[in-house]
Amino acid sequence: MSARPGGELFDLSGRVAVVTGGGRGIGRAISEALARYGATVVAGGRRPEPLAETVAAIREAGGEAWSHPLDVTEEASVLALRDAVLERHGRIDILINNAGIDPHYAPLEKTSFEEWRKILDVNLSGVFRCCRHLGAAMLERGGGAIVNVSSIAGRVAFRRQVPYCASKGGVEMLTRALALDWADRGVRVNAVAYAFILTDLTRGITGHEHLSKRLLARTPMGRFGRVEETVGAVVFLAAEGASSYVTGTTVMVDGGWTAA
Image (cartoon, helix red, strand yellow):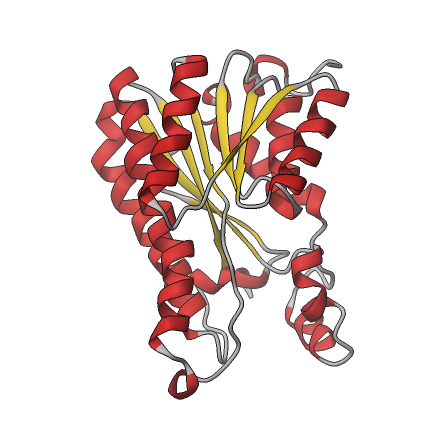
């Protein structure tokens, strides 16, 4: 691959990175960025076709990648991914907990427990499962970097989004508490929180005639984020050379939303 900006500071050569939800949108962009900086990327997800496209794009650009089925709501699936990575590479250096959903838009009194449970199981318990099992492999080696993908909804409230806000608020505190537990054991734990990014999954919001205008008016930079703008913070937090003294923090990639 071509020379990497930042040189040794952001060099991920020799690192093995697992990206959950790595088949599309932000997950795919993160996977490609980590590979561009030298990491071998393992893209995990439930749908094989998008994962194959991510792997093909990375390989076409000269990087190294492969994929593995993953359902973060199933402990056996997380363990199977961990075991496959360790068998193939003997190590896990970077974990990006990107898998997440936001399928529900309703007031709490019209939210069923099943709808609540589904969102929490993916967005929060899924992060727990991956940190617990893949992070344990990092602890055994005495080093690693975990980056949890959060949202501005973990810091500010949104109407009719109680389950999602609760899940991302949980990710924020999980990140900080786990960073404290593992700080003296060589594993750094951080998060990146996004505002509204232009992806297929957000098209219903960012393309909405009226809602999009309200969101843009609330965003200091006056525009939605681009997918390529989501990866820099992740590479920074994953790279030992750039962020070796950074743990327990959340980098806000939000166009100034939480500053206003």
